[in-house]
Image (tube, rainbow, N blue to C red; front, side, top):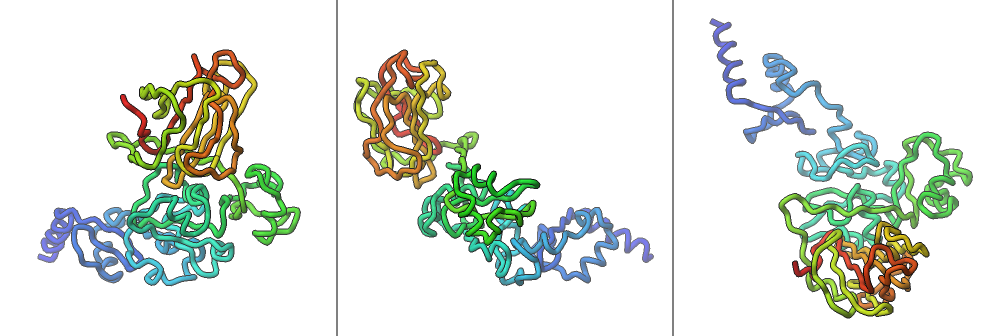
Length: 355
């Protein structure tokens, strides 16, 4: 009789397809709202076997979702919702949901965590904390145009710069050279000895003022790019051909030497010039300028005669940034058949596209 009851109980549990998710409070049976205590779970686990419960129990440090010691904070206080965090896997932390615990290395470096609120963008969050948009993006493995959702948790550095994880055998001077800063600044902020001999593999460093390339997210399949038609002004004068080519770009033709303006305020993140007359110099763009904007997008201006700004400059909407180029055979022209501006918007819809 007991064997039949045991068999029916096992078949009932397996028949309803109960799954188990593990939380800091214990196990929660998916498909229902009740959470069972450890004692009950252990009893059921003894009947169903470990495979039915998703394998071995996770390490408590992984379940705490804490950047630092799992015992340094109470997970119940740190995370009101014990469900899985919305943030993507963070390569610097090697974990998800980078909640910073008091007294941890991150806390000592002044790094904090921020939970995204409705209406937030990377640019707005950066402005709130007085750092650059690129600082927010790079510390959280994000690109320009990546969508962040309310509830996600982001790392916030104490100043503009980059977060770096030390590799084995890596020197302080090499790190400084990589990010274009003085090694003394890195050592001073991170309380290192001047020659960097105290560096250890896996150690995290805040690099004040460091610069790192931030990519642009391609549009999601079947999803339109965000539209900010009033955000961008027409970047020059002349005829807009309006045909899309090359990363949402349009060609606007006029005489060489025509003024080129910043379509929106932002920071100049790239200026490339060349004396080459090769058609595909700088990828065919020739002389170019790239500007990063607070809405997460970037604008690119190509086939320039003469750029008038430098990398790191902050520019305002409508500011003169270059002279139009594009004359075939001239140095820095790139792939062009006549005087014109090639203008791209990356991470958002180009409002000057016609077809």
